[in-house]
Length: 189
Image (cartoon, rainbow, N blue to C red; front, side):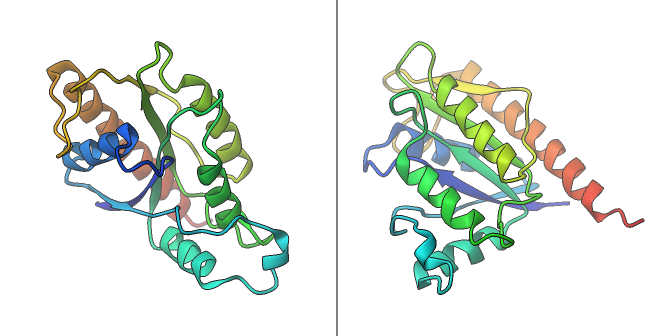
């Protein structure tokens, strides 16, 4: 089976290395995974005041999440956490109460940074948030990508063979995880 996977990039920077990583993941994904970008930059700051009447941007975002089978988060690390724009998107998708778009959608988390610990702390924080919104997560293998100049070119090509192989295998594991989670949810009692 093939699955449609919504990709969230937690950086709005035009030259984002995490956007480069997301492009690489699209290229390296097995044929069973169709990775599609779900933009998050146009969402206003979430407030529960919107719950009674979601604005068009919020409805379009929730519709985009509903249209995919799984979720892939590519996040930088800002101040040992995830960027505000990514948290804002999760708030929009999980509200109002009773309409959580992330519930039961299998997810995976990765990210890249030039720092030695890459995005490890941000990813742990994001995993905690995803647990709360009831999104089953690929726990292992973890994918903390240490970014070096030229690791991924502007077209999304990974220039280091071992990094490319790791990402390919990580995506294969994600595919197996998605198949298990989606398959388990289709079992009726």
